[in-house]
Image 1 (tube, rainbow, N blue to C red):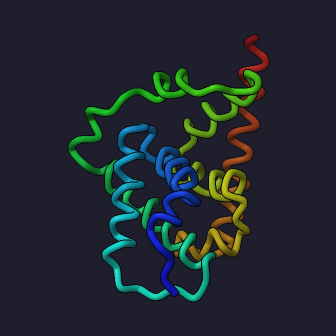
Image 2 (cartoon, rainbow, N blue to C red):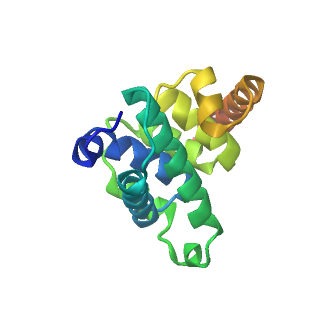
Length: 159
């Protein structure tokens, strides 16, 4: 099964951007990752079993591309996370604080938190996307939640 790239862009560009941004912490790098991901899909000859298979493949490629960007020389020239967050609109300040803390997590926790809460993937699906075990995903989710809880409680104490 193959879907037209234009349809996939309309449906998944925001999800791919969010996943890439959670790793790169740069809007311009995340844009590049999304574009590169759709280019890889366009030029691949891979057949997919379902629409969900396509979505998982796109997310896996975007995550891997974002990790590659982080290892690149050009990563040193990216905009700060604080500058980008200031351009976003939030319904309340708690949402902004939560996003800031999620983005401050180490990558291995940040990625699973993003896929679980923002993309609504199950633990099994995340394990498949990241090519790791379900128990590893559960551990990362648990540790990421604990880190978030501690950081958010610290912020409240100092207010």
